[in-house]
Image 1 (cartoon, rainbow, N blue to C red):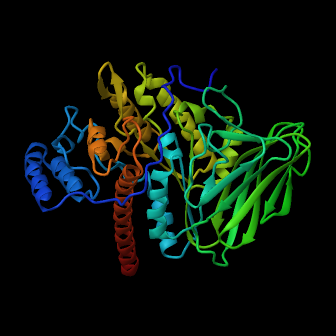
Image 2 (image 1 turned 30 degrees about the vertical axis):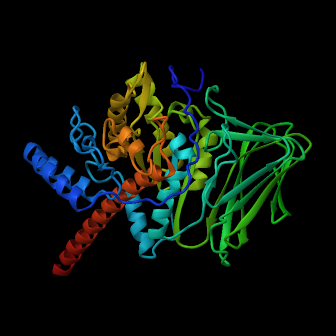
Length: 474
């Protein structure tokens, strides 16, 4: 069975890397007045729901307000169908990771790890880089996290990492491949011929303080493969595997070194090829680690088809406290979207993720707004509404929280607003965002996460106070 959906969407175009630019908050006194006037009408029409929506719009620092459509309720009524904010009806879907974050702030634990999986919105790094930066500023920087060995469509720049390959390397991705194959966390494996080498300069944006670093090297070994030498600062510190492989098997090798910045080199020593699945980097100090593992053009069908044991072992080695799952934009272009089959596949993936990290919470992100060409017009992706509805139901069934990027962007048709923003927040392919756009979207997510975290902390303090009072009365 091929490793993709029965009807796979066209692969995503790889977005170019737009130039850097400041993230400028929109709004001002006049716009606040406009929001207030529109809000009165929403409150009158929708009661409590309208009041909540107005507060959310008024507090959004980065929501584009240049076009009234971004402020209006769509025909599908987003308050009921695709509301803003994190959907967690019972308040428990993120309770464990919030408890870990409180423990990190209070010095009762030294590590919180988040693992983001997805398609090109993840592979492009801009969104994840901003989320990582915001959260590490708040909770402390625990290192760069997981780094893929390459991307099939061409290597993307990674903040804080410089990757360089020399010799003959083949980068292979999991899209349109048979189910049951072994892949890295990003759905990639890179095979090098004897004599080839791959170098990772890790944490290049870190202050080079005398802080111990922990690194992991993820490799795949098959009968007939050669040895892979692991070097730190051009010195061989390990040779993998220790014993010749009798069957195809995963190896996760851990090494430690003093210093935040590290140069890690992997050299195919032969005889025979070597396969690299990725590396990771963490700092031995209290802080947050944010891993990203994305495969452009993928849908949830792709990771759900990985060989489960190999995938599960890699996930477990990263010890995540929260999964952030960012698929849906590619699924939205399908004209024959099978809700039942897709939901079953997504829930199956959640089982694999939970088997690897039973105490991890999960946050499912829906698609961004997407337009597709139809004759001479750009129209909403045909399955956008049904994908969002399906993902929201999967999240509730699977015990995950849900957050809608499309709602955060302004709802149906907001892609046009983001394209006209100055500077542009979306590319003209009507699928991907610019650097500034991804940063704006990430800010909206982090604002919601921090808001929910603060609320959970207040609830925890209230419960502790009540419990303490009760204990005192006894």
